Image 1: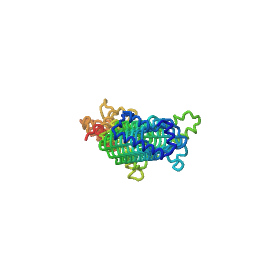
Image 2: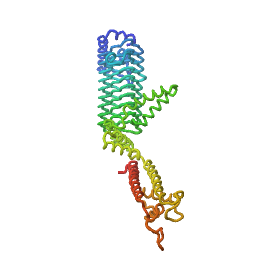
Image 3: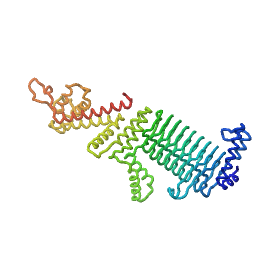
Image 4: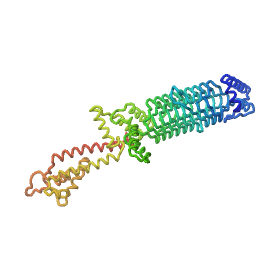
Length: 516
C-alpha cells in the first residue's frame, strides 16, 4: 500500500487492519506452497509474484507526523513496515504487535510531553511484548526523547539500534534477541535496563554511552559480545550474567566500579585497556577544579564558590574514606576475579588495590590499626606494585638517619663548628659526614658488609670516640669504639624500616614479573 492507502486503513481501526493483514499472510502462504515465494537478502522480491505481494503488504507511514498518540496495540504488520522520518509527538503504543517481515524506523523520532511520571505519562514508545519476525531497524539517528520500553519483546531477525539516542529510560527487560543485536554507538542518557535479556546472536555495544544506570542483571549472552570502548558514567550491574562465548571489555571506561558479582564466563573476558575510575579524593578535587574552570567567566566570587560547594557536596555523597563499603569491596573483588581469569596480572593487582581501599574501616581500635597499616602499604609501595616508591623511601631513610648520626656526633666534638669535618678519633683524612653516611648505609643494608667489622669500628671511632684511655705502645685507634645507646637503638630501628622497604622492593619485583 502507498501512504494514502495505509493511512486510510489505519483509521478504520485494528479489526479492519488485521483482517487485511491475515489476508496478506494467507496469500504469502499460498505463494510458499506453490513454490513462487522468493525474496532477496535485501528484502526485495526475486520474482514478479513476490514483488507484487511485497507492494500490497507494505505499510507505509514514512514521514508522517502523528499529532495524537497512535494506538498500534495488537496490530499485525504482514510485510515491510516503513516509519522512516515519522514523528510521534505524544508517544506511540505497539504493545503485542507483530511485525511479520521487515520493520524500518530509520530516522523516526519518538517524542513525549508531560511530567514523565508514572501517573501522568507512563510510556513514550511502547514496544512491550512485540514480536519482530524479520529485520528490525532502528538505526540512523532514531531518537527516543521519552520513556521507551521493549520489555518482553522478541527479535527473531536482526535488530539494529546503532547510533540510537535514548533520552529517557530504555527498558529491554526480559527481551529476547534470536539474531544479532546491534547497539554500536547508541546513547543511553537515562537508565538502560537489560536485565534478564537473552542474546542468542552476537551482541555489540561498541562505543555505546551509558549516561545513567546500566543494568544487565541475569542476562544471557550466548554468542560473541562486545562492549569495546563503551562508556559507563554511572552505576553498572552485570551481576549473575551468563556468558557462553567471547566477551570483550577492551577499551571500555567505567567511571564507577562495575558489579560483576557471581558473573559466569565460559571463557575469560578480554580486558585490554579497561579503565575504572575509583571514587577518590583526587578525583573529587579534579571535578571541583574542572567545574570552577568552566565557570571562570563568572565575575562574582561568591557564585563561583557556591557552585564549587554544590559540586563538592554532590561528588562527595558516596565518598566515605573512614567506613567500609562492603558492596563496593565485593564489586572490586568481582572485577579482580575477571582479571585473574583473563591472566591480566597488572589489572588484577590494580583491582586488588582498590579492594583493599574499600575494605578500610576506622570505627574500632583494631580496625583503625588495619586502616593505618593499609594506608602505609599504599604510601610506601602503592600496594606492592611500585618499584620506585620503596627505593625513594630507602634513599630518604639513609639521608634522615645520616643526620641523626651526625647530630649525635656533635656531642663528642670539642669544636662544634668543625663537627661535620673532624673525627673524634681517626686520621686527619677522616670525614665525619662520610662516616655518618657509611653508618646509615650499613644499617640500611647490614647484609652487604661494606668493608667488614673493622671498617664499622673505624666509623664508630670517628663519630663517637673510643672506650678506655690511650696507653704507651697501644694506639688510640686500636681501642674499642664507643657506641652510644641512642645510636644503637636508632640503628636497630633503621634496620627494621629498611627490611620492610627491601621486602616491598622484592614484592614489587615478584608482582611485576609474576614470580611464583
